[in-house]
Length: 255
Ligand SMILES: [Zn+2]
Ligand SMILES: [Zn+2]
Image 1: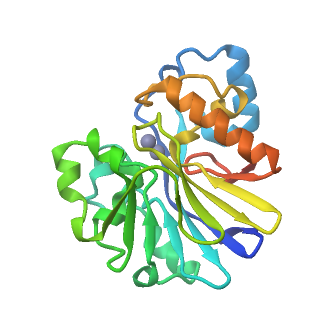
Image 2: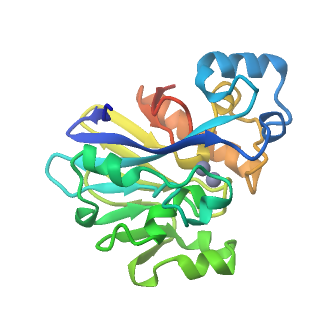
């Protein structure tokens, strides 16, 4: 097993895979407006994201941002243990505790967990108590849409609610990227000459790389999501930067 990391200036970003599994929405329904040519281009870019039966195959990934001189920040918290909220559809239990150990990260040492949004496959280990000493950062507007059950699961004593963009450190900042959900946020790591965007579900499939305006059925506001996506992609492209992706086969993608 290999730990996959990418160096951004003086920061190491490590991809941690919690699981791999198929999605509950058939891909032709997930991207209903995509053309045959779009699918051909998307599949050429990410041939691993489809099973021989034509199902959408996703990775479920968490990223650790590790500055040379600072504490670890985690972006997202995966599908979680066997009894996690994602258990109805995702391949639980996830293997994040093992991946963290392989990467040399003690979960108790993590001071900050940024949740890009509150879909169940992004919160699993944060609501299970794996990070007892972490502040859990969320956009306040993300609380507006969630179910009472999800609200109850969130550890109030760890929550820090944000209103829009927010700086975490000299090299790391949070940017609001609404649309997939109302309070969706992404993380930019900017160090030396390098830039990386940890996208969250702003980017769930290579379809959105080849045709970024294509609506995705699980986006709450597809138009707003497309605007957030094109804006973030433009920022990254302008710096010849990288994307860190939760669900594509490859964790790191250059635009
Ligand atoms: Zn999502
Ligand atoms: Zn997701």
